[in-house]
Length: 194
Image 1 (tube, rainbow, N blue to C red):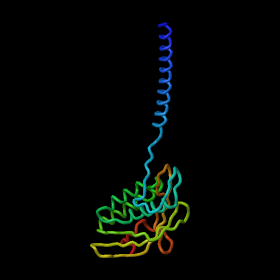
Image 2 (cartoon, rainbow, N blue to C red):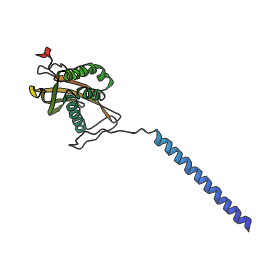
Image 3 (cartoon, rainbow, N blue to C red):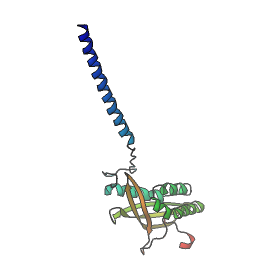
């Protein structure tokens, strides 16, 4: 009698042990799979004006437009105290190719702004898509020296953005002159411009 009950309890214990082993194995595999996944950091525009979406290699036009306005305003609205910081922060948002092309120009213009006590603000007015990822940003740039307005003019820039791994990077950024040429990045007027 007792041996039958003992064998029944032994059988139940063996089955419970096997079920727990299988559950442990499944949980270990799940943990390993989840550990392989990367954390995705999604950068949102500072103000969300319209609904948008972003995927691994693509984003909605609304997202592209809002990020372009944010990037342009960030790099073009500077003063002597933050010019170098703004330029370095903007450089971090560039693709490696664009950074190689634009770094010397951006840092040179930031140094000029700092050394000459120039304050500049950019106010975007309009954005036009030239292609799926290339925009023309038109706005007004105002520059001050010692609190006095020295220039106020309408300017246009082109900005090309790339979406890669849920992140947006700037592939190109240029100022467009009235004649269609592309001088420097910012609207800084140096002695050679006058």
